[in-house]
Image 1 (cartoon, helix red, strand yellow):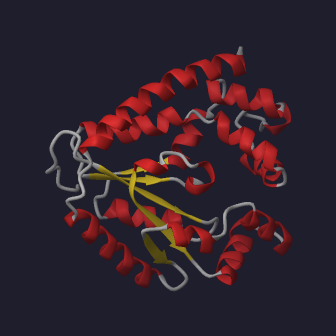
Image 2 (tube, helix red, strand yellow):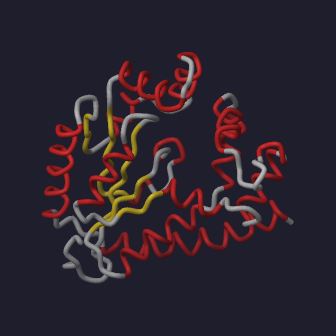
Length: 237
């Protein structure tokens, strides 16, 4: 594990993001293998939309029962087709997820004394979640042709479907302009591993502790908790 050498509140948050099919999950896995504390937004998103939980009820209420599988789980592929073709519906879905769960899991890392935590968030720039709390933002990049090929092979998409999914997100070039660190995943795994190890060494040696942000994060968490509670009551009755 990363050395717990920090004082109370002395933890900084590193955002990890990228584009669809750029290999962010690979980078996240490599960071975990090195001992970095990682909070995975995708994993949390799957947990909070389990059948009959508040977020699940809110999604079914807004998108209908047609998006459910036979076991009552949400059909992510079907829901994805709906939101990637409709900006308004995509924003509705983003607002339904209880971000407080994500932020509280990050705060727990602060509470146990981690020096830093990786917040793995696919749509970080699109949603703006906790961006102002980030000390560093890491973008996983690959060239457009590689991204398109990977997405078509991974999801069995046509070129048109793949391009639609890619274009629904902020461009990789724009994300790279906003990043403080870029990992180019266009090449082989060994090359990516070298870049990830270099990033890990940089983060682990950093003294960019954020005691003020620790307090700000707690305050934000409390605010979002009550906001999320009120919204869930409105959405699910």
